[in-house]
Image (cartoon, one colour):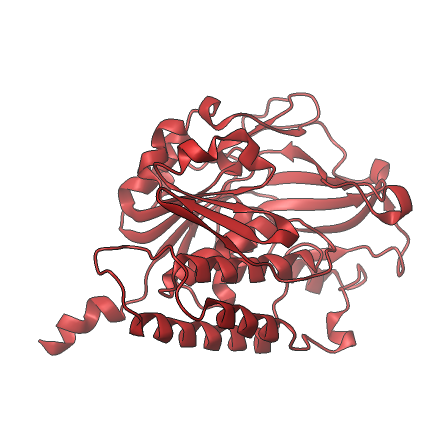
Length: 385
């Protein structure tokens, strides 16, 4: 009897991620730098795997999908895997332009309500990047999940019919606005936040706005809090917001207060921008982070709290110390130089296994964009161009 009574509190919280895996081609000045597994689902699951978070994942790919992943996707035989070209410009004095130019080249099938499992989850995440999240899918998520997190890019992205360039529309025009009162958290970058009225949205759900090297800010009905950043040298911004969301939800899964969970999100966002494509996290760093999270969880449990609150939004005493401990964890030497080298194209089996085929300009002949096998017309799931 005693064991049955304690089972609910000892069971791990379950998460459900909905978003398609993608193939990302990173291009600078017309030269392909890397071809890598992409999509918000891949970055979030990468963080979850590193922090031992229990989760299910629903993702669709085409028959051309060749990456090794921890959660098998749904393969749609007549589709191509969603493919993005991310264009960067070195700009003046190598500073580069502020934002990449992102183009969707192929789009796989959308995720439909029938693709989601018929079971209950503590947390659900709608994290599409290529238009694969539908209104009906979000409606199903809020039915089967206690708290739903939505990345605004899944709602407001539209794609040019000629070249697939990513554009944004206002949240009110997206068709998803009426669902906000049923959503727990909506995450947006500072640029994406301009496409919604934060003051209006915060009245019905929590808003998390990431702002790169400035950290993030969390808004809810009764207040807001700014959460500090982790200094880093940016190499590739791809997936930073996705890794942030993965770290943020992982923190809440582990019982952290919202500001502490956002700190964890900032940490993983900073780790991601320091690498090209899907990042590798050092095992020693992950172990140290998990230890600090558990220490912080114990501190939070010992603090006075209102039992009727599902999440604690205000800073709990010790937040700055937690920040300092995570900064120290990040400074752990990640690997020896040889371990950090990219896999070169002359070892394709390892590159495919790890989801990365890198063509560094300093080791191999660069692959110019016009010769790329991915230079083809924009194609959607129904075969239209």
